[in-house]
Amino acid sequence: MPKTALDPRFHEISRERVADRVAQELLRLIAAGELVPGERLPGERHLAEMMNVSRVSIRTALQHLKSRGFIAAVQGGGTRVLAAAASDCTSALAHLVQVDRQNLYDLAEIRAGLEVWAARRAAERGTEKQIAEIEGAFATMSSPCRPASFKARDDLRLHLAVGKASGSAVYMHLMSILSDILEEMFAYHRYTLQIGPTYDQLLMNQHRAICDTIQARDAEAAAQAMATHLQTVLSSYQSTQETETVPKAPRAEINPNIQKLAGR
Image (cartoon, rainbow, N blue to C red):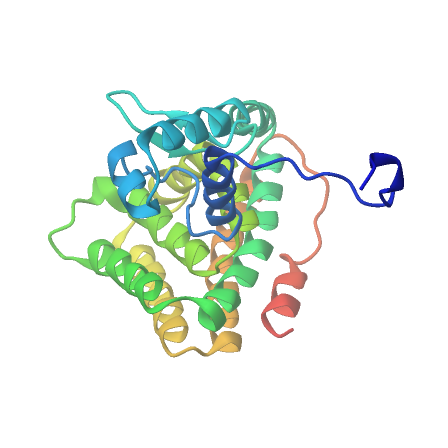
């Protein structure tokens, strides 16, 4: 058939390279939250075997994803998933927090609303493996042999495990972007803001409630447990603000929207 007789609405489709299909599949896993920011990818040989393609196709696909900012090389070999623009965003946010503690409170308040949502989603959609990871994080933090120097790190690990169980790639990328400043927030909270075995036990009981309700698949109870925990955290920030010498603008009650989110 002469070319002029072809229907102009239809266009020739170019053949897709194997490397392009590999890149698309890896992007699908990232978008679905199955590959999360910070996670290391299997080696080229292992990926080639699992995806039944050549190592050349794997290498080309990985280079394509690196150039687009989805993954990065790891020192010593391998690649890991990235969160877009993490360094620029985190450095600017860290500066805001350092300039004014009010910004630290605001960040904690915003984070609180997000985490209530994540706890509900984790109870609704978390896989058995993901829920086991939450339980494992709690078992580590609650071990009587665990040194106090790991409190902040363990606390953050549990909250990230809840986020992963939410099954939201968008949420995990947001948390990854905030990871550095979140680590500082957890350290400030556990080692400066509130110190002592009584407060530590209170937080431990609240974390236990979060884990239990997610494991029970009770979405509303999980949201409420997270809201209760984060109200405690925000109360600590507010009490510190009230004792600061620099005057602050008056605030309303501590984040009333958290309870609304919990009881959606």
